[in-house]
Length: 376
Image (cartoon, rainbow, N blue to C red; front, side):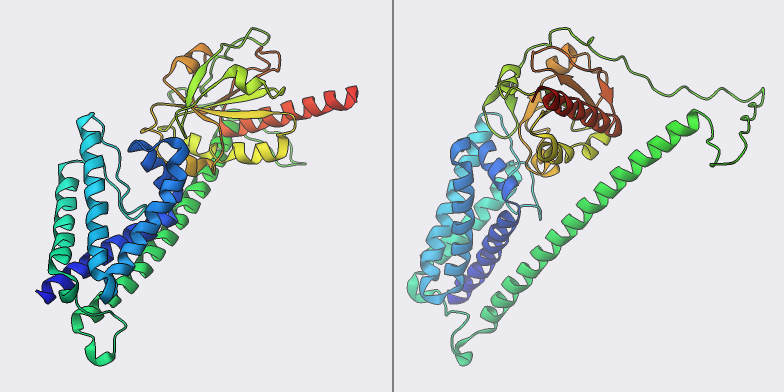
């Protein structure tokens, strides 16, 4: 019986250590997952901390001989609680991602996950039924009292921690590579646009007329053009949209209440170019926040935009648009940007692309500061 209990402790300690460390390294996802499971938004941050502490404490209890039996009870309680929460969500027709192991592994809840949870609960029951006297020794007992199974448990926990740290570093490296690819894509798009207007001669070189295309060659497709959106000066369409980080709604009036023009940034989770825009508003708020307000309006549901807070660096507000707001503003593509003046009227044409939006922000901020200086 002791051997079965120790094996169960090994498996449970590895699982709870992995889950706790992974959740601690990816706290924003942990908070969002708890909200998706039904935890009130006001309590989700505190609940995330308590969950990480509970999982790590369970792993520690399980690897310590005198407390292993208590660790079995705690593990069983956590697994039963998760199982009940998963069943309740499935009964309501919802299947949020469990994010049980943070960025190491995540999947929507379903029958397979419930079976796995039941197996782990069975292992916890083995530890509980084994009793305090048959739980085995601690990993830091006298060398002569340490079994090979307990040594394997310690090695597994150490290797697991190292693996999680390595995976986290790899995720960060991939994120950095993604940002570089997005920047390269923008430079390539600008180059293609310049070539479409004709070659540019080096400074001091005589201008050379571009060669006429061969008569049998098909004409080059024109660069994409978009309508300028709503005319400048018309009243901006009002809206009240749910926020991506909680259940609150934010309206245009709320945004204009600060007394600054509002830059509406329209994005979509399926838009690759939009990923290059997501981190910009945080920096723009730091640089131009004294004269401009910024808001990201993203298409789709909260589930479709899972993880957007990582791309934005925690910028708020991010509003969820079912499509009506983008249609009302006549935004033809994403990423798109338009300025609403402090009087609630459209103050700029709608522009598209990260570079054009950045130019719009700089021009608008410069105009606002010049106007503020003239009246001071």
